[in-house]
Amino acid sequence: MKKDSKEIELLKQEYKEKIQKAKQKEKERKEKLCKKIGSEIISLLDKDDFRNLFFDYIQKNNLEKIKSLCSEVDDFFNINYTNNKEDKSN
Image (cartoon, rainbow, N blue to C red; front, side, top):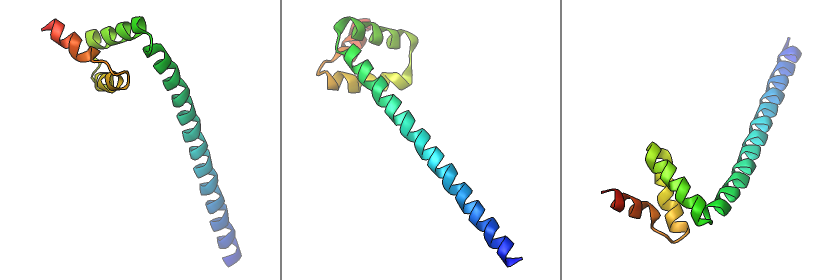
């Protein structure tokens, strides 16, 4: 019985390790994809026309989660588009 119990524990441990590795691999894939998407978006945001359309869309659709990122984008590109848009609308 003890031998069976030990084998079961070993199998459980192997299973946990495989699940952990699969989760880690999935996380790494997501991070890699996010970096690719992020670099593409940054290259697009570097173009004034796209940046203006992007911010306009966010403002019009009240996308709160992304609005907070806009200030980071402003800082990154050393612009103040978000605040200027809000000032003009007031």
